[in-house]
Amino acid sequence: MFLKRNHIDIIILASVPLIITFPFFLSNSLIASQDILFHFVWSEQFHKVLTEGVLYPQWVDTPSGYGSPTFIFYAPLSFYVISIINTLTKSIVMSINLAVHLSFFLSGMSMYFFARKLNGEKAGLISGILYQLIPFHIFDLYERGVIPELFAFAWFPLILLSMRKMFVDREPSSLAYTGLAYAGLIITHLVSSFMFTFIMVGYGVYLSLSEKKKGILRLLCAILLGLGLSSIYLIPVIFERTFVHIEFIKFHYYRDYFLLLLRHLIDGGFYTILHGILIMEAAFLIFSFLLLKKKFIDARNVFFIFLLFMSLFLTTPLSSLLWKHVPEFSNLQFPWRWLTFSGLSVSILAGNMIGNFKGELKKASILILLPLLILSLIMIPLIIQVSFFIDKEIDNWRTHSNIFSPREYRPIWIKDYNKMLPPTEKVTILSGNGSIDIIEWESNKRLLSTDGNTDLRLKLSTFYYPGWTARIDGIYSGIIVERETGSMLIEVPEGRHKVEFIFEDTPVRYYGKVVSVISLIVLFLVYLYGMRVFPQKYLKQ
Image (cartoon, rainbow, N blue to C red):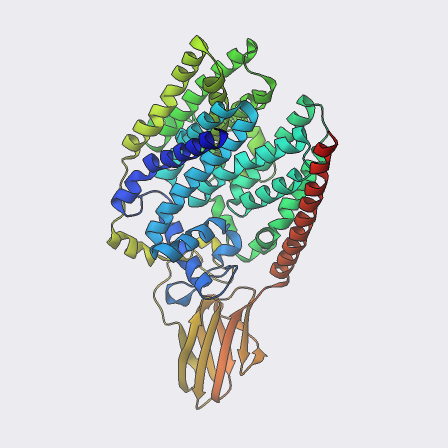
């Protein structure tokens, strides 16, 4: 009976995303959202590098061979998912749409497992469905179109679940699960992982106080383990961001994007939805406070009332001091990102209310939640006016240089990093007399054949970035960086030669991989220890 009930729950949680993503498959195109074209082009680039045999893509090829270190700085996990799907569908558009559906299914399942552990079977299913349908989740899909953010939704409840098992059930293996899930979040969406780290620490402190059990040290170890596992991505992000124009990200200043600013209230549009979410979730917060005061909400859920309050507070100008003084907060750009976690809190609290309350209290909970569901399923599609790109538009954007080579990831050796990149020859002879042939041109490798009547100076369109090395007939040769363009130049002696450019690991990228491998071994040992100790505990009981 238990298995049958679980199967029904899974079918329901797989069906809800079909309702959400049905227009995608009906149109068989990309939704016209803010960032979706970036992720479409980057998915193509990422898949190309994988098919060339590079297991961990960092440098990608672009039109005219400029190249970009996009995946040194942008978390890659969701692009692996799209690439795996693409091996079956042979269509990046279809792969992205299927990945979106998968992200909603996984987020519902992860919330289902956490909320079931917290509040029971029925509440778990309701929370899972609500988590898929919360307005900001739908808004993030239809308006923002940031695929990694959608996958990040799936990690939050899993981390909370493993943390609860760590503090309450005292499972030794939960440290390994927490570290692994935290690493997964980091290499899915870095901004979301930074924000959620504060929530992890807060929830850890809350559990240690409410359950009167020690666990903070283990939580810190789990966080360190997650940082170690994700070092293959995280260490280059930290130490190589001085090589690109990452400051361009700060083009959006957080002070301009608070909710409840007068100009946003007047402008409407984009902010109409966000203000609607804020107001309706604030009403739900007040309702939750009243229930807490009357002791209808038990201690297991109190943290999520606090998280709901803090998340809504951080979207408003009242929180300016925190944004100003908390390190790296200003780099989050958009305070309304915190609606992600207010929605998570609403899903957990509402699932508990609807699943476990009786009579009038249950009806009141449904009524207070109903406006949020109406906003998700009816108002958001109407306000956004959902539309889809046609194939010709997608083809045009595919060759747009600010998409295939994002300005914030352009190397610092380019003088005018903000300019449009024109079509150009991949290899040219700047000086000397001879000929050149391209034998092989892959994302991380360029192989050329030269036949010079004199010494030649060659110019590759590819931007220089640390890690590019050059060899002439197998012997290392120096790379010259052109001042204005940041392109790579090389001096080749007269005669016939093989010239090879290969993108290799810098010491930073190499040691990032080493730290991840060591952390993986530690994870395995921690897991084995947990599996050995935890069953013995129950045998003794």
